[in-house]
Image (cartoon, rainbow, N blue to C red; front, side, top):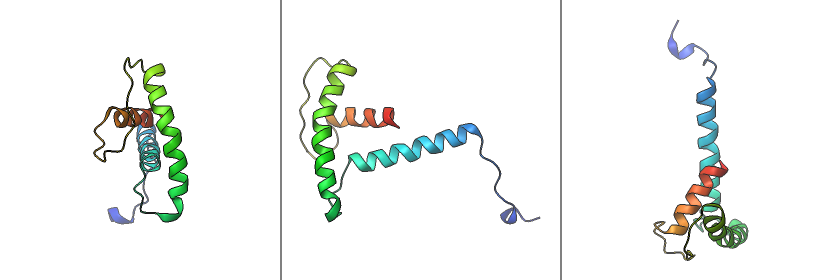
Length: 94
């Protein structure tokens, strides 16, 4: 029988877990990182950005134990302490 005609086999638990984690992580990443290209969803992104701009510094200080204050600004590079903690929070949430 041709391999292309065989039905796919059952996924193992580690494969399912890895797929679900990646799906959730990238969905969360896209949701927390707006690209301002979708005009009607920008209002949702404004609210999410406002909430995250308050939550991530609190998370970094109170949960992760960061000793100094972090600034929240949009430099566009994604190479800030704020962005690193947002990335880490996204991984924990996934």
